[in-house]
Structures are given as C-alpha cells and as structure tokens.
Image (tube, rainbow, N blue to C red):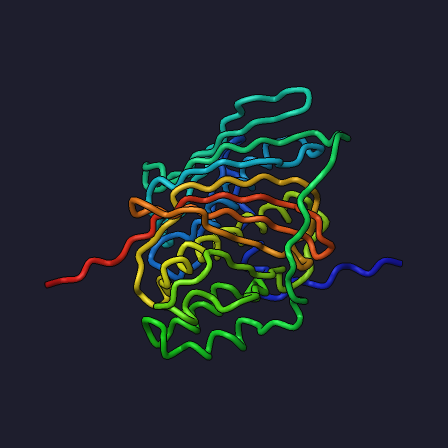
Length: 300
C-alpha cells in the first residue's frame, strides 16, 4: 500500500501556494506576491506565475519547451497581479500562449511560451562542466552570516535566508559579495533544489526552475567588475528580459547545477547565459538574460 506523500515544509508550501493561481475567468488568473528582498516583485516569481497561467490553458500532454519574457515595470509586492492568457496557436505538435501581467491597469510583464507534444528525435548535448558534490558545499545558513559585516544593512542576512527558505541554493565558488572590489572571471556556479519533495507534475518542476533561474544569473556580470551587488549596495539592477529553453525532463526537488557566465556588459546593461544540468550530467535548461546593472550615482 502506497503511503501518501509527506507534506511539504512550510517555506516550500508557501512558494507552492504562491504559484497556485486563482482562476477568475477562463483565461484570466490572479496571483499574490511574497515579500521581496528589494521593494518590488521578484522577477522569477512573476515569470513562474505567468508560466503557470499559460500552462493551465494547454492540454496536459504538452510541456513547455521555451519562454521569452520582458520585464516592463517594477511590480508592487503589496498588490495582486492579474495574468491574462492569449491563446495564440493550437497546432498539431506545438501550442503557443502569450501572457500579460497587469497591476492597477498597467502591464508590468509580458511572456510568450511554447509547448510541445512529446516526440522522438536526434539527440546530443555539450558535457556538463566540473563541479564539486553539492553536499560538500556550505548551506545558505552556514555561508551568509560570514559576510554580514559587508552587507548594506543589519537585516540582509535574515531577509536573504527568508527569501530562499524554500530552495537549498549552494554557491560553488565565492559569491560576488564575498570578494567585492576584486574583478574575477565572469563565471559562477550554484547547485539548487527545493527544500522538500514535489508532486510528479512536470509543469510544476519547470515553473520552480523558472523561479530560481532569476536568483543568481547576473552574478557573473558582477564578478567581472568586482561588484558585490544589491546586498552590498554598489550596484543598482533589475531584470530586463529573460529567455529559457527546456530540453529534457528534470526534477526541481533533485540537485541541479546552474552554470552561469557573462560574455559582455555595456550601456548600463549586462548579458548573462546559464545552463542547468541534472546531477547526472544531462543538460536540462538553457537560459539567457539581459539585466540593468548601474553604478549608483554619488552626490557631490
């Protein structure tokens, strides 16, 4: 006799509840937000919620293979977000959806997502890069207090731990805030998985990876210039656009390696590329993001 799955830990359940949108019309959904590290809606949250909305209008036998998104305005964490889905195309193999996220009558986010019926085809992939066993790396609770004296405020450690409580995210190397002022190779790695088991719902695992994908992707831009990030206060930044391609099935409650690099930055913008591999070395997701990365103005 199969035992029912254990309930998710409270922080993970809070995140799952955040992604469980209210359906208010056939193609209109409403979501709430959680307190963010900065006074706006976390970009990974709105992207994941928009993908949830799109996925709920797609047949169950089709799974997301790509998304392309633009962050139009800063979202208010204190106000609900309404997601309107446009059924662009329902083909024999592919289904396309467009989602607009609105707050107070103004669009804050736009997403296009494509879903595909499973089919067999040619396969190859680049190999996974070397990385240490995630269990040998410090947890956030072990790592972050070491750098509390470098952060912009006394509550930054607590806020970071609260914001990431649903996800076990472990840095492979020193994060930007550990050695700011020292330019380094524009490359970074983290391992991540949810802090608890998830249901066997492929869309849920994709949406949770989408949520996490926005947490550290611009780190490689910061490393190139020796910047510590918002936690230090030496840059001002925000996501501008975000694209993801989902290549192979994966589970977000099992270890995933997020390998990230930045090929260029200019004009107050930085470009970052990411690859997400399973612990077994399968390339599961490719990610590209351009973000706003500005040096704060100083007053004379």
